[in-house]
Length: 427
Image 1 (cartoon, helix red, strand yellow):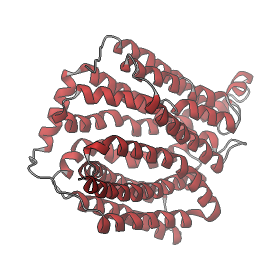
Image 2 (cartoon, rainbow, N blue to C red; image 1 turned 45 degrees about the vertical axis):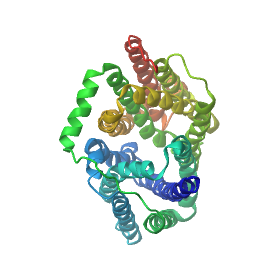
Image 3 (cartoon, helix red, strand yellow; image 1 turned 180 degrees about the vertical axis):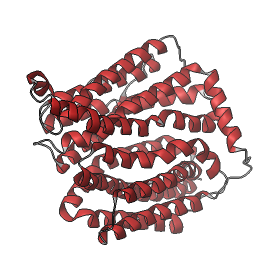
Image 4 (spheres, rainbow, N blue to C red; image 1 turned 90 degrees about the horizontal axis):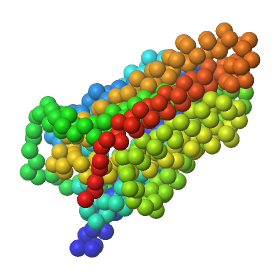
């Protein structure tokens, strides 16, 4: 029995390591394309639109994706989705090498890749459950969390370095090599058990059951809507960051990579913190207080700072508590939502919680390009504004950071007051 478990865990190690490598390759390409597009357009909105195109299919389809993937072989689903995503990268490479790459090509390819990820992600999650014994759930979950954090650290650094050294050619080559490794490992070395006796329920019915539960459980619904607000602020911040760092005299593409990686380092530290922190008395309070610290500090620090080292410090403060929040929110949801409803409720949660990300990216980019930068340019004579937010291109992005700091703080304070009336018990 022990040997059997160890053999199955080896399947996990192979799948986890190769899929993580492929995710790193995809993330490197996505970051490099952001750099390329900003160089071409100088627009925060244009670069934010890349992520919007990737996330829009996820937001629209995630409520159905889990039920859809239940109807197909998990291994074949993952292989097909990964292959189609890789083909999109090949198309980009051909267009780039023939000097035919246009901005709308990037948007279209990101939509297709985002759709593939929407279907592949739940298939991958179910696969991990099928190949890992229950005794190893905590260990493997920790490894997956660690790999996500490491990818967030490495991808901007590697992307900025490769892009600066050899442009998109080398970046895309690395992405495709990582895909080939993951494809071969999954196709030839991983055996995924087939599920048996699973009802093929209507996707519409599943969605309705999840929404009905949320309507009857206002505490969970309030937490999810709060997180959708947090995602709105965070995604607007992500859209603003390139327009803030790249044009800054002390910034640039390489500095953006370092600053972005600081958030990943913070999340690794935060993940380790979660494993040693004692059980809190009030998990609901932890959720909104950690976000108050994050949103109420990072945005203000970056708005007023002028040095890259301070930007990195702001990123660390803003992201180190995110794993703490996520862990406490996860405990609440897993205790409150019945096991037999978790799949459909989580599917509804994904749509409600993440639909604000493309909206936030659009708002952040549009506010910087159309409102804040023109405002700072027309008020360049104001000593107060230039003292607070600087001057020239990028000062509007600093102003936007300040606005996001105010909005994030208000969101956490107002929602915190609403959540105080709810009581959560793990007993």
